[in-house]
Length: 299
Image 1 (cartoon, rainbow, N blue to C red):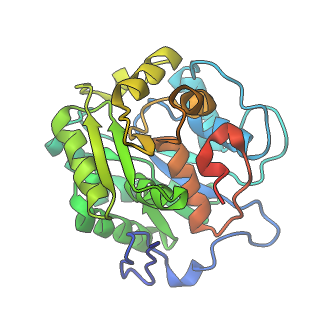
Image 2: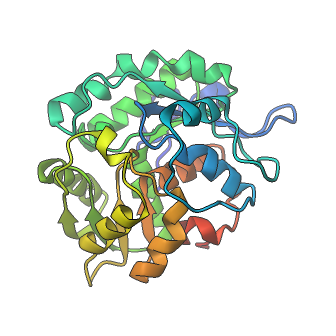
């Protein structure tokens, strides 16, 4: 069940809405705009790519090889590769992550209220009508109740509807109508197990959890198509109805169709579900985009 929050009161699913902007969506003819708080520099160039794919652009394949510097300029400005005019804008700003480590203490600090709040004004200046904390590990590490409090505080600071990637995964599983999933994580095993526990709190059956032992987002961001496909294959399980790749530092936007073709089942990836969550916050119509995977063709 999708949760809603009004005036800082958490809803069942953890998303939060602010009364003054509860309608979200389009204002005065402006293009609907979801803003993302993204930790550090790894796979932020997935967002302009996803913006172009949502607009019906080609969604070119490749390794997501733009440098952090060039990708940051496009993402922060909300621009996208050449193609059709965007149907929704996806501007992004970077948060200060502190120590780059998939370790519980570092993740708790990375997702602290002060670090998120520090960049909210910059995101609002880009026209954001909703905000998503584009990080999985530094949200689920707080547990379901703590992650709910995190987005409630973010909504309060921003005065905008808010959510996070962890809740995005829970909602995406519901959108697909699946009950059994497998987790193919870049994280160390102990962090991957926290994500499993988070999903299980929503009633999802997790039939397999695989960690890869990678400590830094910087290393994850160097992975290309071959490594991403291998991660998904290694984490798949014969009983799983979908496979989840939960790291927003992992480039996946260019490989979504390849991933699902390889596994023969839906694949949910962190940046993909994060964008879907933003559209949910705006009540924006979901376009039929097979290149974005089953999540964007379901229903």
